Length: 365
Image (tube, rainbow, N blue to C red; front, top):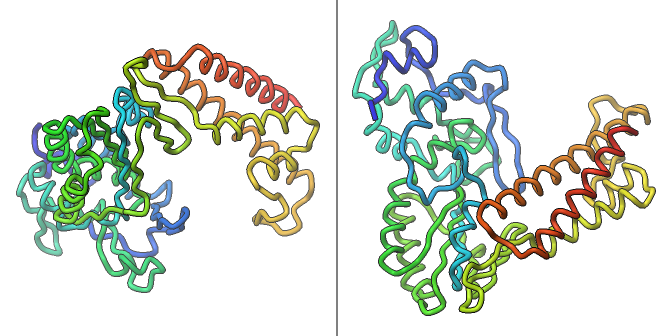
């Protein structure tokens, strides 16, 4: 592909030639999701608009390895799982601190192949175009941040709209190396962001060997990444992962299966049961999702009950609508790939009909 030059760069940003300075702390809001720190630009900020344009007109055009399944058009988590249903031995590995492990130097090294070696000049002096780009997509974690591991470091932050695409581009080299090694040893490999999934036939034991784990671990360390070993999963025949179950192929079951986990089905059954049991919206939210309305921090203290009721209805509609869309997508995926038994498909279709009924009833109430 054609390299990004300064004419195209500033055309994408729709601004005159200038130096783009690194983000400062007050431009970025931070919060936590679980144990992960997230950094976000304001929805209406010009910097976020710049990043969105860079995604569409530059980053999305850079080729990726086909093992990468996350953050791509026309692929989903289902595509991450699907290649492994034909195998028997499974290994799931997790990359620790995936986004912030990608530092400025690694971005500079990778994108030097995609950005022209040109200078940008304004009244403050000269700066490489490559550095202008890097400043626009990275963030220096404040030294006083609660994110102590990366405090003071300039990293690819989880939460910037360009971070997913850049992470796939950075990791492409590793995907290729891993894929080639796996091909030699008859191992299937796919990656969804920080989740790495491997599988092999029952006759191949290398996938569960210490030497294979060492190969992956040392390769990642060499490129600034580290495995989260407490999240490693070694399984034979059946693997349960993030609400899905992969049942590997056998001689009498050559195509394998992908289905919803018992835990996921139990939650959907409970949601449908509670909705049809005459409970209030707040009671359903508490029973199924552990969301207690009295513990919600509303912007205005002593919020009227009418507002709280509307909030509960809206939350529940979002939950039901989300699971409805989730089931539709999963059923379409199974049908497209000729996966799952008629019994399972009937079960999912039945759940979908019940969810649609409850959604319609609640929406009209």
